Figure (tube, rainbow, N blue to C red):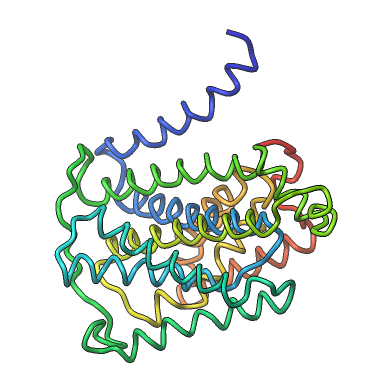
Length: 311
């Protein structure tokens, strides 16, 4: 086996090893909890970055996350859907809202687009808070009981770890395609010069809309998994700025144009936050995200993986 083929096989093998940790019972639950959160955030950051690769910046992905969480919670709690069907229902809610983005703010660019996405988070949050007969309003939906999964994975936290790692693996593959496939080169052309890309026949609108729909779908899936793990959803939480900002922070910190960048950023910063900042500064532990963003923009504007040119 030559070296190039071995190098291509290495990432899947590493991923299988990471996935297999879910079946090891000796791993401390606190450590496994941090890993599960880090991989879930890594999946969110990777999903966000798929859309960002089309040359736009969104501060409204919490809308997709929150709709995915609420769609899942309502499907499970109110209608008794199976787990996977509930996840799909939440993801479809997010995609429907992404279609509304396409109809309303698709032509905006730069600061106008960023501002429009930021404001758009408030629309589903306000609606959900005021439709109390369906969503329980601002009180949220409590005691979400997830049915047993029809697949052979561990139960409890170990099972959620396996699910989040598997989801992140799918998103890493898709993110790699968005960087290095034929449509990935189209996205690069759009980022570099949208008018020039149009002139040479790149389907700018199609690719940008495709990345938004893919990003919203998986952001909705992440919202559903989050609701499953936490066991409840509240509008002020799942539609909060936190879930719009941290994917951007992780992607910039790790490197937006590296296949592993958003995930690596999430693993490093989330681990530092939970293992060091929370014990030392419980009231201000999230300051690490702002500090890391400032340092990244100042010293490493292309992320900590800027030196690595390939995925």
